[in-house]
Image (cartoon, rainbow, N blue to C red):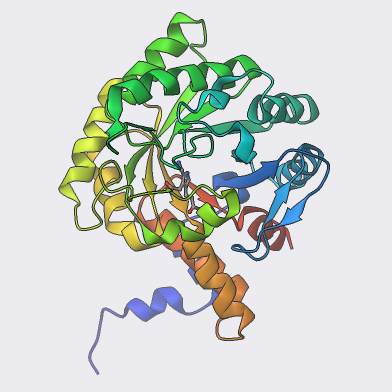
Length: 325
Ligand code: PBG
């Protein structure tokens, strides 16, 4: 054939492929979500094989191992004892609570590790919703935002580096920014869950924390999976309200949303490869149907290629270990 243009020339050897590779993935791009609980025991999580609900000591150890492999940050998810769950979610802002104690232990043991904390009421709320629930079952926006401010301040006092509001209430980024600034926490960053979809991919996570809603669903605050323009509206608002990092969640099924937000903002973008995405890879690999390490790598490269600067993934430590060889 008379073919002057042959794209295959750029793929002909590993060296050539190294030279033309467009997307890089290193441990420095990863954030490791970790679950933890009260007491000395670390417990395997039935709904997420391969994941553990750590004691605080176990959490510090696991975070340290990931950090030593080059993972710069962890994000914390507490399992709050049932007796502390209330309709007002007051336990989310007690200074000797599980999360503040974990933040302090992590910052003492690993001063260079970035600690990110989740701001939302679902682990503390007897209703299992991210916001306060009225007697007639509505999720109360403005009342919730006032509690989220208290929660963010409590994390800041304990030394968190980044607060990550995952609740999807309107106006919470500006309110949290104002609360942090007026208390002298100008250096605490906000990673906003900007486009968080009402997704069935969160099922295994809710099993890990016993945090599923007792009634109803999350569709009045989390986004409709059918919508993309609405994500750009949320992104513009979060940026204007002072978010430092915008997040898209889930990641793999929403790559178009990552790419659209990438084109619409100069802010860094995070994407969350959530529990259901983790479990699909884990279960298919355990059955011998997929090659786990190759699929993990490909799933993460795809998320980076779509435009994510950083990825929250339960595979962070495992992938970083494999990358180091
Ligand atoms: C709750 C929260 C959820 C996740 C992170 N923070 C669950 C939810 O919104 O119901 C999901 C993470 C995952 O599935 O891995 N604020």
